[in-house]
Length: 520
Image 1 (cartoon, rainbow, N blue to C red):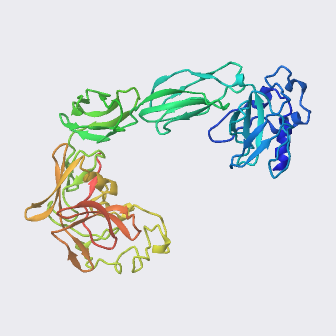
Image 2: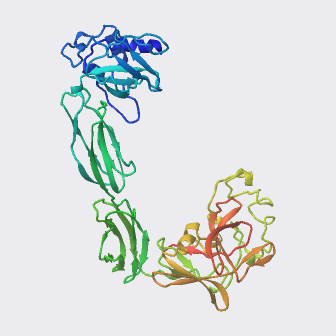
Image 3: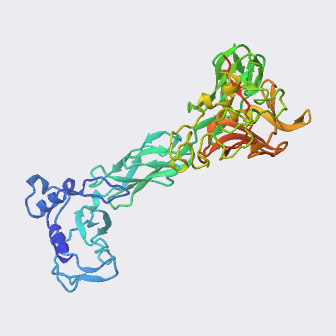
């Protein structure tokens, strides 16, 4: 430390050009390199090019000594004597040459610590610092920044945009005209050290530019950020209508504090479907078109909904009737369970992946009788994604057609529903569901919001081992999709008098199957 201090004091005896020593960018997050260290050493050792040492520079030497009591940062002090000696630190004498005018003190990393007016000898000054050393550079007091003029004093910006600010320092020959930029609220807007402002969210923020020469001069710009729309969410992404049918679309504008939440609706083809300013869609003719909802604040944010205008596809095939609920996937739902002759009949029961059910003579539904295992849930032989549930891992998650009870028992036009088709069926945007009774049988009635068509699903319970459980109180309907909790389960639709959802159930149990098909 002593040697470092001596070296730096020796450096102060060298007259150095301002541009060589003091130029450099100032940043908030890191110390500033005032100049290249090698160049500074070369200057001290007298090896610098002649042009770096200027007789006409603002560094004018005064060979007198500044006499007075000086204070270190930790509160200790030392006295600078008239002969240029001092007892700091530890009674070791150091000489250093002060200059008239202003002295800049920097820490060992090159970051400014304090500006000192050397003719104010009675003032308390910091000499040492916690960084283990200090650099001293002399400048004339007239070369400090006295004023900063900013390009904009007030500014309005949209969120998500940028704006460039700049400053002009006075006097024009200030030794260090650089500034440090800062934001009063970085959540609203940020600024980089080139003065580029990025508006983030709505609000008011002050951007400040502060001179880095120690003069304390600053200027600022007050920015009002206007919150723009960042997203629009529609209640429906697709709808199916019959001619003259209608559906209400609603838009949620994000964020909720957007300055302008108004939207405008449009249709890609009014002859197929038109939309009113209220969001009401009216079907005019067969076909497909797109409804667009767009923000009016200039953000360009949009959301779309596909509209399919179709005829009712309800009918009968292979003796099995089906209903068109005008669902977005165009799935047609059978009116009866497999093995039933009317909507309220329970029909047959199948283990998942088996095509012969209770009506075909299977009376025991358990792991010991399940086709696709060796007697237990953890000895699966097909439709397995984990070695923990059997040595045969085929990673199949959907039934093959030969294991699909609807395909095998009703013909190639039919399938067991997918998990997604069940989710669509009970989606409150498309249907309503109620617990009711049909011809004395309890179950769920699901009705299309679009065309009023409906299906009835009886609460047929499930078969486990040799018993029928929860009949008339619950319904269990297989999908063709493997379970998500473990491969010993498969997805099924479950309901009772209060609840309806898609759940996971043991594959070995006997559940109902309600088949589906797609229009040709």
